[in-house]
Length: 285
View (tube, one colour):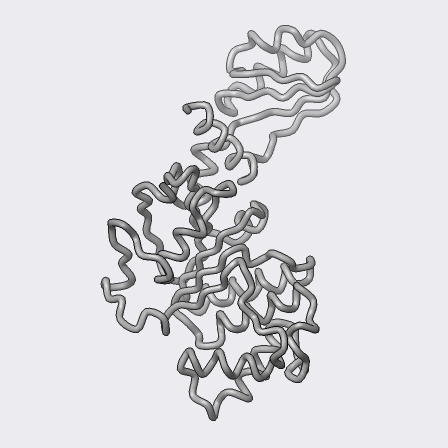
């Protein structure tokens, strides 16, 4: 089973992250949203529930490139724009502005096959955006992009959300999801294991951890009130604690037995939470 009763909702004007390990079912879900595949059961509801003229409202960037390498960039963009219903008289100016926006100004006469992989990805992005869709669905949009291209992609996706579009991205780059997404859905083995506002998930799933640099005997750390677990790595202690109210007492007890050189709170990243949730699911099997 590729997907098992996956249900979530999202609003316009936000960037939504569809996350999960390889083979989780993310691409299958995106293909169902676009209409390439049909679900065995269930519904996809857009706005008031209407799916009329859906293709005109969606911009889809697949993970695999669908470009014609022997065509010139401008010629190919005109072809795709006409299929999306863009009026012919407005095409030249629209393509010029679009190429400038994605960082490919003046590349109209270049053959697509002569472009780098990163620049081909920029062409694909422009095809996705050219008809100003209400819904953007992007499968691994950062694949093949250098840091400058990734920054440009993030800027454009943010601009589209500010325009009011609903933006759905699938990515393995947790740092990009953390920077861009207001809400996320985490899928594992076809099941939805978490869904919601990212900040709220980080608060509920993030582990409260102190990182302590020390020298001396820290054996008592495992029995101190408020400490849930202790991990040692040389002269560093990683202390998972119940909440911040225990910190003064923990440090007082530690300083009585050890010399403390540094103490800081660990920032729980989306990567940490992703790994933690997936490992928990695997341990249940």
